[in-house]
Length: 264
Image (cartoon, rainbow, N blue to C red; front, top):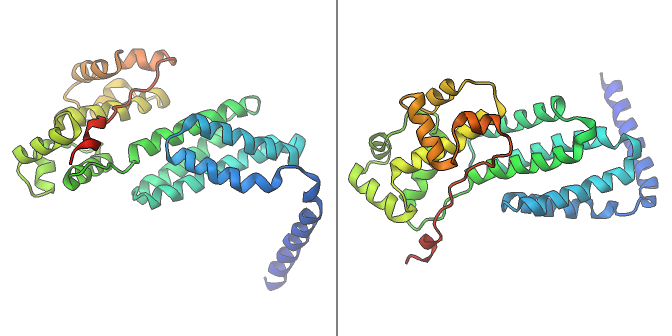
C-alpha cells in the first residue's frame, strides 16, 4: 500500500514539473485565478452579464492550454466551479443540506445534460442558475433584524406549511406585531410575501422537472391548483402551464423596495 502511494506521489510530482516546464508557452495562463476571483465576485453580487463574460475568458484560457481536449476540461471545470460556489454558499449561512443538493444538482446537469456542441450556452445557463439560487439566499439588509430573520427562515422552510401564526410563534411575537413590522419594512404583507416566494420557487419546478402542476401546487401548500394558478398568474402574468410550455418567459422575481434603505 505504501509503495502504491509513493508511486502515485511520484507520478503526480513528475507531471507537475512537466507542466511547470511547458506552461510559459501559453499566453494568459497567469491571469486564470485573477479572472476566477472576479467571476466569483460577480456571481455573488448577482452580476450575471459580467460573470458570463469572465467565464468565457476562463474558457478561452483553457482552450489555449488544452486545444481539442477543451470540452472535457471545461466540463470538469464546471463541476469544480459549482463546488466552489457551494462552499461559498455555506459561508453565506445556507443550510448544509441545500448547499450539498445544489452541488449534486449542478454536477448531474453538467455530466448528463451538457452537450458538447453547446458548452458555451451551457456556461451562460450555469451562471444564470448560480445567480438565481444566490439571489434567493442573499442576506436581507432591512433595519429590523426580526424582519431579516423571518425572511431567512421563510427561505429555509418554504416547502413547509408556513402561516403568519406559525412564524409569529417561532419568533415569539404576536401576529399583529409581526404583520405590522413586515409590511412596514418590506412593502407588502407577510401573506403576500409567502405567496411571492412560493411562486418564485415553483417556477424552477415547472421549468426543470416533470412534476405535475397539481403536485407542485401541493408541494408549496397552495389550497388547490385553481388558487395556485390564480396567484401564479397574478405575479408572472401567465399560468403555470403557459410558463412551462413557453420557454421564452423569463423568471419572475420580487424586487425589494429601495425605499427601505432610506429609513432611519
